[in-house]
Amino acid sequence: MSVVLRRIYNEEKKLGGYRVLTDRIWPRGISKEQAEIDEWMKDISPSPDLRKWFNHEPAKFEEFKKQYRQELNDQPEKKSLLNKLREQSEGQRVVLLFGARDETHNHAVVLKEVLEEK
Image (cartoon, rainbow, N blue to C red):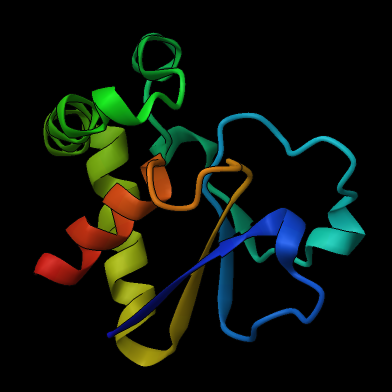
């Protein structure tokens, strides 16, 4: 299994593999051509309420992780998308793209952890 994280704004050289944008909102200033994504999985991102509560505050990250993992486990649509990503990662590299400035405290980090656990 190969899952890699990339901030979409820092990608001078596009990394090959199955490229998935994991943000609910399309990144500002990036065209679809520039992104070169295979899929936009906006429904795998945290719920709007959770995202707004977290607000990318590092002090809230542990609680955010716990709540986001719960969403991934409890919501059938998120669970289905998670399984799809697992299947994709069996045969090729999966590149999880995100827009957050903080590269260590964001939902894609949690998503990668969950994918690598099973």
